[in-house]
Length: 281
Length: 281
Image 1: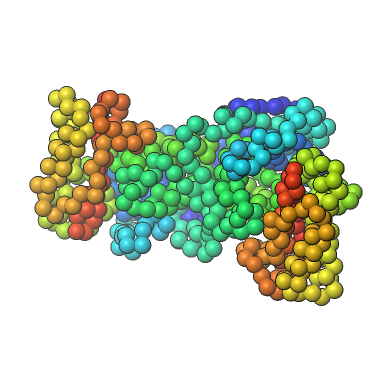
Image 2: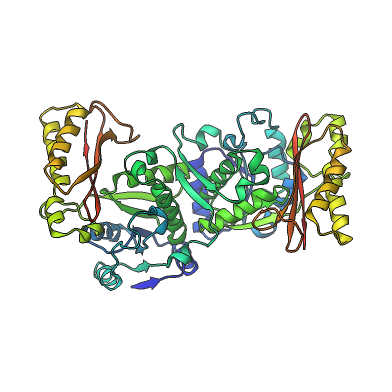
């Protein structure tokens, strides 16, 4: 397994591999890898000649009051996990190597990105789209694998690829959960034990929504209220949003007819958590 | 010579050509080709295995009150000129094939694009960057050739390529002029004969600036006044801007020390014309 830190070297390597006919599967991450990431690596490993994992805590997708500096990092462990998972190359650049001091170009999605996390994290998806466009150019993937936990991100990346005609296939992998149902996230490491206990409220809220939907409930308001009631049972949880939106446009719906994304974001004192489920209307 | 109109077909062709090791030189145009364009094609022809000319009047780079619908078009003539110039492929898509009805992603340059033409044509360079990023993804060029008449566009495209790590070399070709000095432009065709006579004021203004600079004048105000006086002699001309800006940052300068771009834009009743010269400070 190789590690490259220099973007120019990364790009030369990738262009050369593509030139000689190898396929490249990219798994873009911010590191502090968990079984969720590793499931995406496994998916990439199954169909690419070469698997590249990028490890880059991207400053431009964090707001000024967000957790860029405290985002968990563990290079040694990440490297060992990648090696075990059969990764061919880690791309782990420094922020200064990725962004020129006078960088002035970004990729902006103007519709899907205004909702859900985009509403509470202004500029977040501009940072995401820009860094993903850059990573695609630097690592030249045949396909890239994204986790379904970041549901809005996945949909925005698909939109970006479509609208900019980027020749990269976007593949997704299902949410991987802890035994109690909490969706795996690097940020879970920051939860204190009392918060960790209550963090299962996100999954419980989605369970409640899915059960009510299975029993025939089609009112978005009713489903949303059921989710909120479940989260309200966790005293440390403060809801950012609980929304039922069209799975493609991310526009709010009032009745579940076409597939709907039920997405939630909840603040705990030590971390903001997200989770989601798709209701096949 | 082939013509492709379908973006998906274009991209497959280009990816396949690159896979088998051919280099591709792209000349992006809005058609109604003149000797300026053909000089860029010649430059591409000299070093690419395959020369692709895109002909696409891009709606997103025209403002609502601009000349999208009246922009001159002549498909038959363009095709004949490309054939004579040894072009391998014309990519000439319809706007609906390039932009999904719900397209929502753009590429935005936030610093250079606020000045000069960007100040008088809001959204113009967002349209340019987005379509060029798309054309690069669709035609997979090794290099792309842009004319120096569109000085700000050239600098913004170079910035985009740098900031998004796009693996395309940007090559430029010098301004080609009519015998009286008017810079070639597809829009010149729209000038009435009285306007056409006076349109040489742009080149004359630049001559005046360059002569004064050669005589040692280093004050931007003095050079600008000389240019304005020259344009004022053309009664049909209405100045949009005459600016002396740093050649890299496009920030206004007061004295010519490092290389400076002297850029001008002038409205005539039938067309808005631009021209420029670089003063090597």
